[in-house]
Image (cartoon, rainbow, N blue to C red; front, side, top):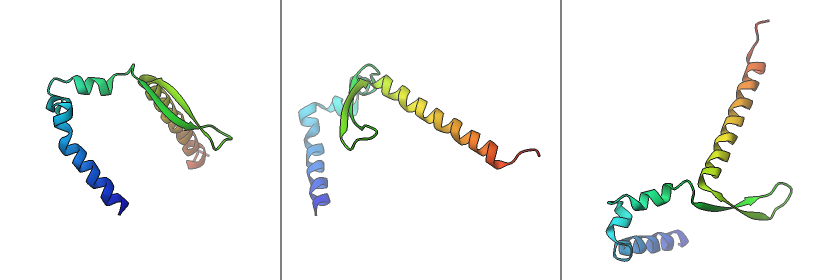
Length: 93
């Protein structure tokens, strides 16, 4: 029931959005709306769970900093996975 109400409210909002925001803001005719979403210097705040605590802390950084952190985390995981597969997978002797 709650999901149905959420879907209904969202569809009503989206139906009226072009009237409030202007058609170009949604369609991206002039490209400005897309630029704002992809701006690497915009401030993005996230609620992050701190190790050893159940309380989430609000951390604000630039989008490019969040992207860098995500890429570094992925690279670290790749390196760990590769080093494990080399030692566990089989050696020459």
